[in-house]
Length: 146
Image 1 (cartoon, rainbow, N blue to C red):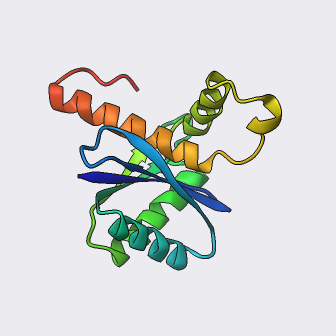
Image 2: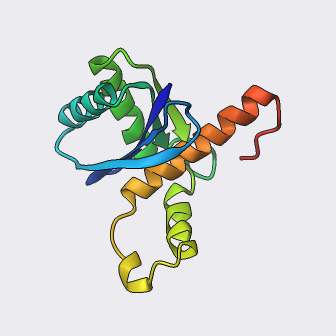
């Protein structure tokens, strides 16, 4: 089953998709934010086109473990997406996905000049990778470190 991951932002929405075995995440696309309803329609259509069996939306939290403003926006987006598709939608802790994306670019040897720009697509890959890792550990009964 393919899994579509969403890095929901105020201006852009990064998307990543897994391979059919749900083990390897790959960047898919970045869409520009228009409105919650239109954005959800685009994500639902892309999930359908790519044969996704699950949509995972990154949600961020504050220091007390409550959804912060971006996390609440992601939850509202998830609710709208649930209205527009029959594909299951889950929220997943995206803490540090953008920082992880930035670190990955550095590890890849991308020059400082080329590192500038948006990380939405790569952040979606990081969310999906974290989700797949957590799911794999849960299925094998291993402790998940978060």
